[in-house]
Amino acid sequence: MPIRKAQAKWEGNLKNGKGKMAFGSGAYEGAYSFLSRFEEGEGTNPEELIAAAHAGCFSMAFSNELDQAGFPPESVETEAAVTLEKGEGGFQITRIDLTTTGIVPGIGEEEFKKIAEEASRGCPVSQALKAVEIKVHPVLRS
Image (cartoon, rainbow, N blue to C red; front, side):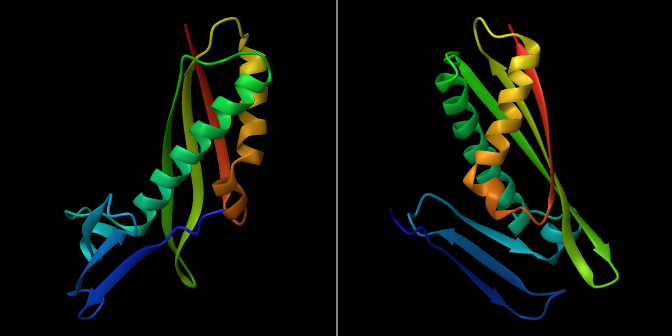
């Protein structure tokens, strides 16, 4: 299996510094700063990249689980919301909410929800983030 890489460079102090993050594949490069991470400034942040990775991984895992259960999906779309909070020991990721919408012919609501939970447990990114509370919110569309 391949090893995936990314790079980050930070210049300056925490509050006034700036940085860039890039995927090893060259598919993405973006700026980040204190403002883009802890406030609402322009640029990306590590939590947004975690959210993208989790949404992508979960969508693939859920699609596979649905197909394996005999319900090949037309589409699965997932939004991951990563919550970053300041606690006594500093900032930490405390929760990830996965809101996933699927168009899946022939499946019932309960089966859809059950398979979504199974997909969350099987998703490699979910497994890597076990220390964080992960909630799945499945929405079946017709």
